[in-house]
Image (cartoon, rainbow, N blue to C red; front, side, top):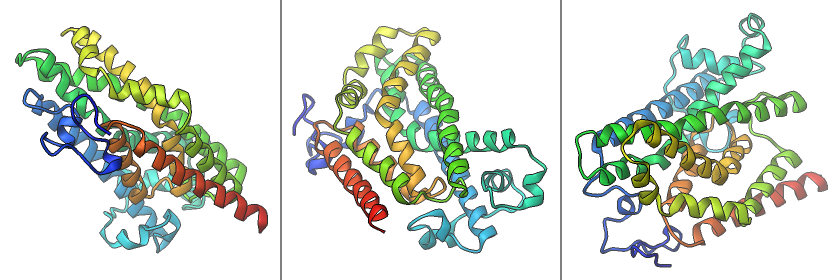
Length: 308
């Protein structure tokens, strides 16, 4: 499926060979603000390292990474493990079956705050890469001015602010699931609950509201950023608006993490790659393929739980 720029939907495997590929699709071109992209990349890598350190701490405390979800045992030896670190203590707080003496010293609101921090790290790691187009667009709109990179950072900051504010809502859902099921917050969900989340997320891929949000995420970003001008507040506000459309697209994808395991960095990475390919592509192939797979997976889990 060709788009106006000649870029193909990543889902059909035919990225335009005449263009710079994914980076062109992402809006990163000759006028990109590379300093802003560098800050963005550093923040994303820091978030991934923090999540990996949390997973490593849980794996070391439990003696196995199997409880973290499918695939985690394969990379368990490569996860950073730093006992006593902030990541390790946060991971312990997120575990309802962690060290009883350590947990008893903290009230439930503190444990909820720990989940909020974990979801904020996930938002940075998984959703901040989608802001890569914004990190380059303000520079192009500014005509190469020296302050273009700073403007890009304001736009990205607005984008990140929305996802960070959404993190407590995701944490509340996870905490509610933990209280209802009686299992650790980071352990993958099972049975009908897991299947229902996957089925809902898969079907949402085909919904009209989601198509509208995805089209807004993909289209006319240069015009919206150019219209915002160079004022920091205007760029920040434009970044928040872009993030709202992104949240409308990917809130369901974030809930899939509850099924795969909220400390399963392998599945987080897979979902991030899917979202990046979808948002930088055109057409419906990627969305339809992802939605079909997730919906069938969810239906199978529900059917299996009801039959058992």
